[in-house]
Image (cartoon, rainbow over all chains, first blue to last red; front, top):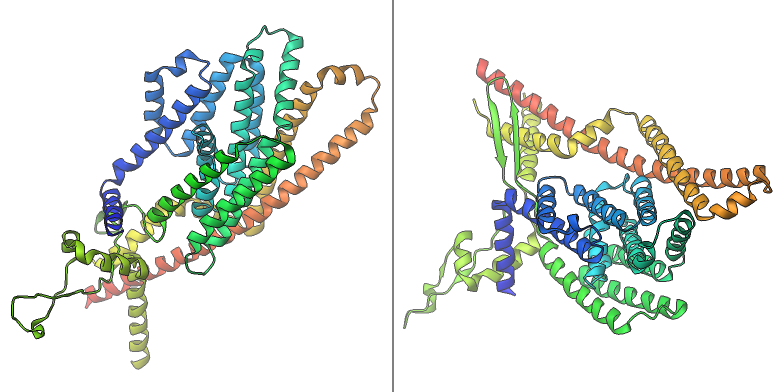
Length: 369
Length: 135
């Protein structure tokens, strides 16, 4: 555990130090994974499938806002479908258009879930999404993950009927193909069960993790996993979906493991980024780099020095500096455990306290005078 | 002269201005009712477009049936059904929009109030500094 805590601390410090590079690299990787998954599962356009195009598009995403990855993924999907048939483009474009029009205008930040959900489905780990979204997101993530599930099943239907879609395009078959896709979408009970299971799981995980009880995050993960399994199995029995029970159980166990990792890296850890701001007054221009500071009240550990026959009274209390804690593995747990309990005190809150105390002092001075 | 606490406050305010503050200031320029009305009107427009897309999909889906029945069907009745569904969609969507944006407006105003308090603090710091300089 000590080693893990140290690794986490190092990752956090690495992130603080190089956040200018870490964030674009993360965006690049997310975009690259999204594009590779799209190319592998649809891949009807040879041009879009090529590695240089994929790399250029992913690089493009690395310095643009996160929402752009969702927009780009949708664009690539539609171009792939255009290479297959016009009907599939109309159906997929209408679904995406309705999603963006009705939902994503409320919470544009949630478009990441729209990308992540189909990716997780393709990678056979969809059960990670509801638990992770419940831990990291808000109840609105229910709608976002629902949109992601719908997007995945729309594309799955199109891929399953690719041979039909690619057949000769005359007017009669055009309407038939269109009807086939809409029927497949509206009559898809599996999709409905997944949307319901994910929505209920996200809500349950979110509500439980916010409870003021010990281990609320652990309880939320366990409860969310159980609810997810139960709803999926109930849906399977009710609608005879023939879902793989072993797949659901092992997938959920994997999701729990991922959730534990997420909890370890997110729970009570501040990843607020370095701010670079510019402002001016009458006398100066200020170019300020404000680095988030966790002023941790490190409890001074007692270090016993045992030298041969020297009596115990020669115990020496040494205040261990933060930097030296990294090397002294023995002392690390005390520091870290204490840290996780005390939480953080940012420089901002200290400024506020300082300003408040000064205001109080000046008020008292005025009163006295 | 450089005043450390003043610079800290200014940094905090500049960070707010460059991130969340931009959005909040745009929201803060509206009165509560005006802001919600603006967003509800936008929602009505978006909802109308979405409804037309769904109706168009429905027409294409049942294209043959629709074309054969169009001369026999009661167009008034058909229009009423479409209008009723449209109104239900718009009312529900508008209510959701109003709730969401009311909460957002309240939050933005709260954050702006803190920001303006900080501005006042900064102003008083400047005044104090100028007084000490005069002395």
